[in-house]
Amino acid sequence: MVAIPRALGSDRPTASEMDDDGYSRGLNGVDISRDVLLSRILLGVLILVVVFVLSIRLAQFVHSYLRQAIAVAAPEASEAQRFWRHGRWPFWAAVNKHLLYAPLLGRRHNRPLRLGPRLHFGAIPSRIHTILILLYTAVQVFACAYLDYATLDRSALFAELRGRAGTLAVLNLVPLIILGCRNNPLIALLAVSFRTFNLLHRWLGRLVVLATVVHVAAWAVNAVEEDGLTAMLERIKSASFFQWGCCAAVCFLFILVQSLPPIRHLCYETFRHLHQLAGLTALLGVFFHLKVDDLPQLSWVTTAAVLWFLERCARLLRLVYLNYTRSAGCTVARVEALPSNVCRVTFYLPKHASIDPGCYAHAYFPSVSWWMSHPFSIAWTEPEIPCAGAIDESHHTDSAPTTAVEKINGAGNTRLTIIIVARGGMTRRLYKKAVSQHGHCTSIRAFVEGPYASGTPGMGSYGTVVLFSAGVGITHHLMYARQLIQRASEGLVATRRLHFTWSVGSLNQLLWVQGFLDAILGIPGARGILKIQLFVSGQEESDHPINSCDCIEVRFGRCDPKSVLDSVLQHQVGAAVVSVCGPGGYTDDVRNAVRSRLGGPAILDFLEEAFIG
Image 1 (tube, rainbow, N blue to C red):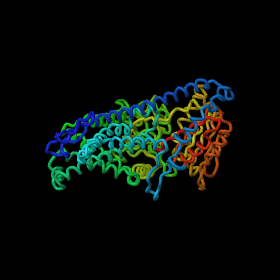
Image 2 (image 1 turned 180 degrees about the horizontal axis):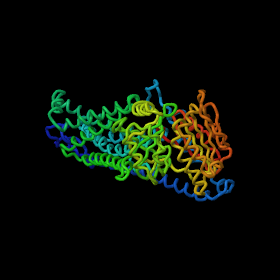
Image 3 (image 1 turned 90 degrees about the vertical axis):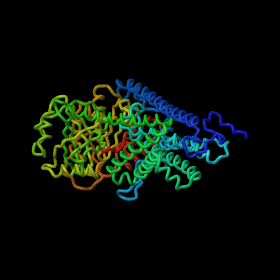
């Protein structure tokens, strides 16, 4: 009998070399060498993508640095600013308009697809995100379909598919963990937001589940054909190898169903608890599934587990470092209930913390939500803590926080403020806790994990900066405005015009950030650079007075981003950038207004930040 030759580079046994166990046992039929080769190619592609994006970011950084260095000392009407105002590469404007800034189809990107007030399917990926997801999915499909079709044995093909799909599922666990990490170094390195990484994390997780299903199904087909369904189920019950594999597969399927947008958004806190528990169980299941037979993919799942553990340790270290000192004790938060179901929370940190504009932090309120944390944009920071007498003692509900505030009082400590909208769960309980106290204010123990960079590039190289905010989205832009005005007065940035647009439901919402806006207006030179435009969409009466000022304009009605840009960019100085933070529909309107102006003679860039509040 003539033996069928093996495929080039294949370690899979031929039909004549197969033992009597069949293709559903051990590594019989699995092409290990080809699996390893394709895995290395896939890792190489991922590394090349990272290097490519890094190269683009470095080129953008050098370009921005040169633009800022040349324009920083130039007067408004100088040739330097006029030079940077006009675009000289129409190709890049077209790439921005039709690829980088473009929604997948039409005008909708961040506006969620809703089936009810609490039931929606989340945002639609942008065009560039969709292309990346489809390309990576195509690579996965190609790898699974790249089988040794020279063999005529159907069972051998299923065995090879089983090994290939299982290998891809385990390999993808490593980037899956990295993409879901808060302490992801790629965020700062590539200037890509955590929101984008989280989007890719979700879609990569779906590919892991799909590969797992293919892996299990391919094994089950051969197992049933060889021994029957009853014998296959008995093997699962009696062997720890199969038990751990089934445990991981069930957890992956549970994560897939539980993470669907309608279920995820319906009860987010429950989702987070179950997601983390199921994810850890799945990781352990895969580890022991491979450990039982000492399979070659064990090192990959070990790497994923180590990364997960180190990232959790980094979170804990951040938490302890920022919130505790032996001399001053722990962080205390002052919670104030404000109009429109909003809390202003001021954290009194026991030490100095350097916080850049655009950062966000995860806030812990043990008395309200135990160990759960939620991300919030950092609206404001102050380098000094006011005296304890500035906090009304009647607002404190227990003596421990009051004592802690007095203890951490000192120069050099940091005061950090966030704005929280009371929606449901923790945010609603926190708001009710403040409302129930005298003066609608209370102090509680709290902790801050962070600060985490948003991944948004700096705006100091632009002569014209336009900031669009809606609701609590203003928290993302306040510190940017303060920094740009301060550095412009010191001659350190190219910014000559700063247009700040804020859309609110009522004038009472100005109370959220009134003190911060006053501080910005009090910076030397602010009134020559800054223009604040308030759009009030609600018709309700307001008791809040409006300070008359040449640089503040109040309009009643909805904001039309296109009209605002048409007005502002008529007097554009240098290169211009538009940044937006707000609800999905609002950011989509601003995005479309920017895209409609791309391709013209002037340089116009677009930055978007996740709506956190």
